[in-house]
Length: 220
Image (cartoon, rainbow, N blue to C red; front, side, top):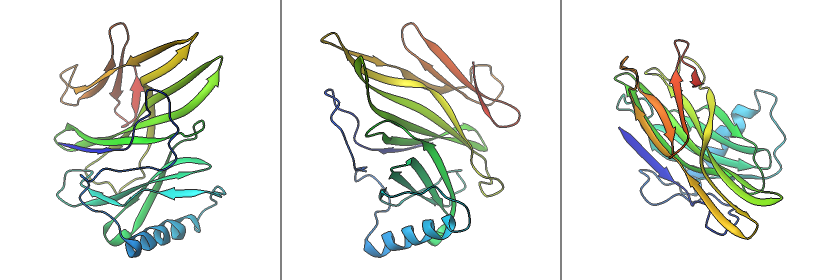
């Protein structure tokens, strides 16, 4: 099972991107009324807890995908703010049930794309490809990092947790030379225990993220 939502990626010349742009493959696109319902649901949740002050907030379109493979569609939207990037999760009819903060990156950081993959007959993972933005310390550098969210069969029993993974793409300019490092990502059952691991590798580097018994990902 694979759902893929792509945003614009960083260009070869590190062009800054401010707005999240989703392609037309999504199953549900918002209109003005839907956007108001989305924002209202988010604001209602943040009023019940101490929230960070967000002076600038930009929402993506609202999308509906089956996170846990039970045949029912959940809602998801991405928020970019001056405090970083977050994912908002919804039940039916824009009922907001969780905000999950991804990260606070450098200038023009953003979520590039999301993928849902099955790791067992009853469990999925949400893969978040996060651009850490443009940083400049001696060299100009842009990196994309992988984050993982464990998705159980019953997604409303406990809040989602996010796990920071390795760098999966990097481009930088150093001493007038342009460099790219790209990693391949595989989801497969390496140890043959019935639960798939996430493997990130290139020619010389290999990292494995394993789901432990307490349903947390650990890097090997």
